[in-house]
Length: 177
Image (tube, rainbow, N blue to C red; front, side, top):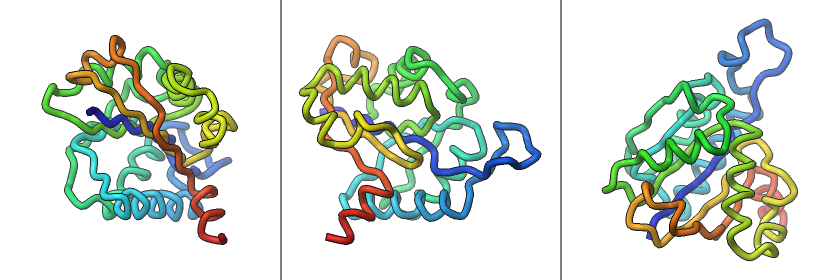
């Protein structure tokens, strides 16, 4: 079984006089990245590999989550993941080494959300609606998919199934209950 995790970068600083690729995380974004890293740790998830946009806010999200991983996964910072289309994201996923069984991709809207919705569309629609994915991919949210494919290279021919969705605000709501 393959695990594919699609994560949007955490909140970034707005209105700063910097190039869009260089916008850092906001204080809220730093807290969200740490919260999601702890969430991963609590569930025992430590990806074998991370594909991450080279934009500062995506790199900062990975760094903020890193302490939550029990292992130290290899991270590839890919310039072509910056504002990538769903097709480009899928091509990068398909290039993962055959030995990789769990992969985390950290990227941007709209491509990341479009890919997640396309993959979720192959499974029960009510799960996408119930999970919160259908309501929007907020900053630092993550969608988890599973596939029976032999490797990520074959993921198109073995549909992925949405098995979970988490976001900092949903985790906060769960903490209140």
